[in-house]
Length: 252
Image (cartoon, rainbow, N blue to C red; front, side):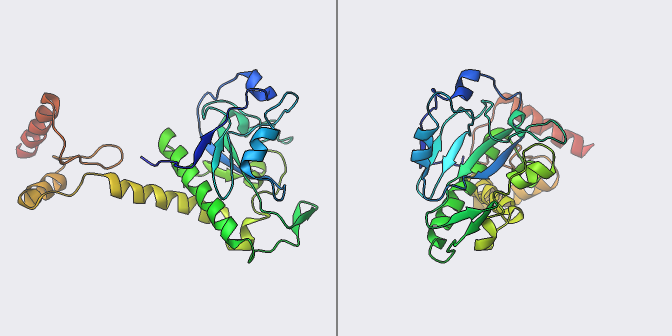
């Protein structure tokens, strides 16, 4: 399982969204935001939004250091805004999080002004990697495919898909560092695949390799949903009977 070693839980119990109390019917995806507030880190944002009268909320804030969780992952939060063309909100389907921006720039018409991508390359890379880890963690938890259309989207894509308000994040920032949402989604998928290979028990001992290869090739041995053969795990009577039936069917 993917672990978030830098996850800090600070529930926003004073925010108006917390008081709303609604849960997500199902988690269908993740909406990626950027704060558009230079120099304010995740911990500060978390505290700023934890007070009465605040009517916006995300599940987490992420910066170069940590991931601050503000709501249970299956809680409905107020992050996507309202799409005037469809009347839909990703609030009803997607977990939302904000990536905090470094200092040193301003904004004009939704675009960064005087942003220095060289100076803040290290910050971006660390925050980006935290966001990748977070999305992989959520995808694994809710069995989401990061490459499936509409699963991982940014606010810009959310608007085009008719489930969010008209914002420019995160594509106002990512291109400065050679990134876009297609690359982001692939990086999430690659991390999930890497983790799967590292945790699956699919390498047989030498004495068993020939037999295992035969069993896999003939569908006698099948893995679980993640492709794990669990070669060194004990089996139940049910498992043994299933194996016997597969061999019997093969012989027929």
